[in-house]
Image 1 (cartoon, rainbow over the protein chains, first blue to last red):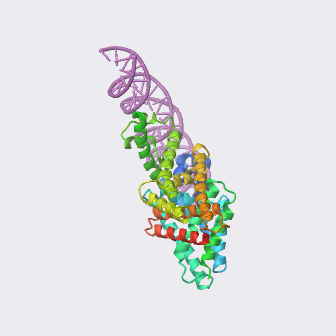
Image 2 (cartoon, rainbow over the protein chains, first blue to last red):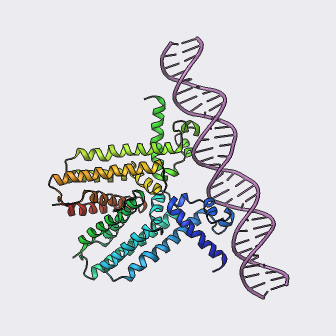
Length: 194
Length: 194
DNA sequence: CCATCTTCCGCACGATCGTTCGTTCCGTCA
DNA sequence: TGACGGAACGAACGATCGTGCGGAAGATGG
């Protein structure tokens, strides 16, 4: 990895952290530059536009999410154990610094603003929903979940629970956010069980 | 109502609509002024700062939400019917132009930025959760819901469902968003029923 | 070791941000 | 009718936005 790619990665790590706090639009090139102690133009050279920067930040966050949440879940035993691993990883990565939440807040930010960023967010979310639904489906074929249960509905409901968690945790700073969300997932799984 | 208060109300209506699309931070005084065909300074005179404008927009949205969602629910018969009225009104006001969603997107925007706006959002959300929990409680005392059900947990779960709805509707433009969310509420109520 | 290519910088641009100031307009009441 | 107060205006401010350009370092490959 050349020097350019290396600093670019450093910049993206900081940018992702800032965007997690101030949003993708609140992420500004000037403030990002001073944060990583570079000149605006020096930093700008790595990305040809602000939109390109936003797209790369999104890609960075996505890779981090897949690595720390999706992959560990896929490594767990099929069925309910896999779903629970997913949830636990998801909760953990949101409690810590890592921003699985970036894609959530970015979604709220861009849901009415057409463009490549929005399109990417839609694709990412569709991918995530597909993954969750697929995990649920293997639970059905393992005989753990009711065969007539709706995998897409489950994915949708689970995402709602996670959104509720982000809200309770980040805005309300509710210490019971984790346990509340876990209980909600329990209810979801109870309804799906055979 | 004097002339000043009248134009202020006009401005706030437009401001709330813009903030629903671009967010409270994306709401800019210059663009707002040109939208209502006023000068920047003429408009600015009504609010002594941008933060004050944001607070008034929030108040405007809150009043509109209480009027079109909360009050009709309280007018419905106690218990499950009241909860369902709340949900239906909430869904309807989010499908149309009215922004019960503003407080949602504002929450995602300000969840990491301390200040009066964030504090207000926290108060508003607490009030809403209290209202929902109270509606659920009357359902318990009416004998429709299990006495050992947790009203706060129900409020939390219901809010998660609504967040999922906003996401599916606004970002994904999912035409099944409404029916999915209704089914999620059905499940919530099934679990709470006696 | 030198030529070349990348990386980064300083500087500047036009635009827009929130905000202030002084002035004009107009309705209200004496 | 004339004075007064609120409402709206135009112009301008310092700051910051995203974005270009030309040149100075520094790494890289022959």
